[in-house]
View (cartoon, each protein chain N blue to C red):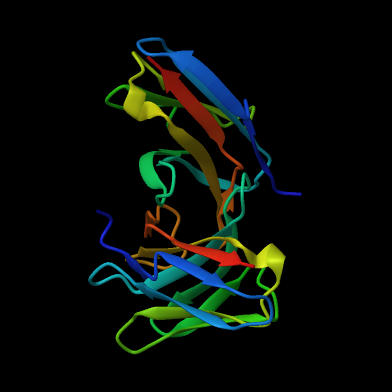
Length: 115
Length: 112
């Protein structure tokens, strides 16, 4: 168990809908990262938050947004969903931010299926 | 362009055999390289980290090597077990706040 909790584990929705994925980092970790992993694809970095502030953006669509709350949990909001958004979404946390030897601890992911 | 390429894409071996996975990168300036193991439906778990000055590092039956001159790394698995069946992901990080780049992974299947 990595200590990172993601909910829900599975989510099935329809095109055009909006969903929210939730992540609770390891106790004490200030950094939260979101990644998307499509079928047979590598992990694609979406966005990074540190202590409530956005630190870096990757290949995140404008339809997607995220935030990190004062209690350090984070939410990833996906709107106007398309079939191609179906993927496994991972959250990872670390104690630091962007440091060279930073080690990421991943949650078990949320499997999103858009029908 | 900074990239991380892994080979082979997939690999099937018999239980008890050894195997070697490759990772080539073009990230520069280089800071460190991690190998992660990702079981199906689970999040990746770090196996080992290699910094610029390290050539070899072991973690049980896993041994990672790094050649910073040729920008290549390998992960050698000795005496494979069924539980080694997973995707192995090479992750490279540059210096100066450079973002982390993930390889597409090698999917390993260990058969009895």
